[in-house]
Image (cartoon, rainbow, N blue to C red; front, side, top):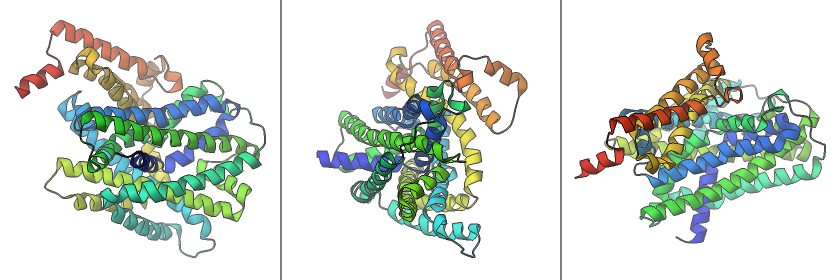
Length: 445
């Protein structure tokens, strides 16, 4: 495959990753972190860029992607976990959230005194938005041309214009960090990176990238892995640079007051920097970013569900995803975020542990007990962390979790994951049970 084609695949991957959360959270982090900006943004990049790249690599190394990884815990877990991931980053959370943010930033600021109420305007906008998503998603083979060659360069150019202007005009000194970032800002940034949903999205985008590469004649496993990593590095580099740039704008904007969220902050920044033209530019950035992510997620869901239910064709699942996303999007952004953030707190640790174990798979001979032990204890801690964010407090359990190492920085699941994995190794040694790999060899013979 030509270098140019690899670049376009990488840019396509960037545009699929770069959606609402990628725009909203880095500047808000920058505003809060202030003089602690660099450790905070590094933590954010670790989960917002590094983890998705690890996920993509892990997906490329195994057959059938995320389902195979999950099945190492238990076949039922593999199926359920994969379906939950695709539904969450697709029609239930990810796609509706992006559509809402596109409305909030791409259209709403220009409506002025329009007499129609916001629910009606959101309905009209989302109907047109999802019609375009549907039409483009029907032809996944052409997505590289549309997104890699045209949409992504336009998106990056718009971001460059905003950021360069910000670096030139915003010369105020950084303020002291807010309470959340005064201590352990690296870990706070690490947790903030969950909100991008990119690690979960990478579980789904793996199938899109592999399908695209196969359509370009790449079939060998080593070649597929190599080109997937190259595309991931291109996308990851672009993501990291954008995060630093818009995060730094957020840090500078702290001198102009406080803001409730990243959209409000960026809206104010664009107006200060470019006047009314800044509003238009920001609207273009948000609309393009959210649109490309919705297309990527819709294609990923369509390809996955077609694979597990081949009797229903690809068009059926694309239709189902877009219609469901359209309906949920009209519930409003606040309701979607209220549900999605606790879910991410529960699902991200499981994803991190599962992917990390996949890279050490051969060292413990693929023991199912190691996977099950690590995932079980991780799941217990992350479940209660998520329930806490929903407002459900179980005092006795929470008291125990608060005593865990790193619990104060939101990483209380780390030590239980290690303990669970070690317990799995010990149990496996005593039982002398065959490894997962040996079982697969026996089945094949």
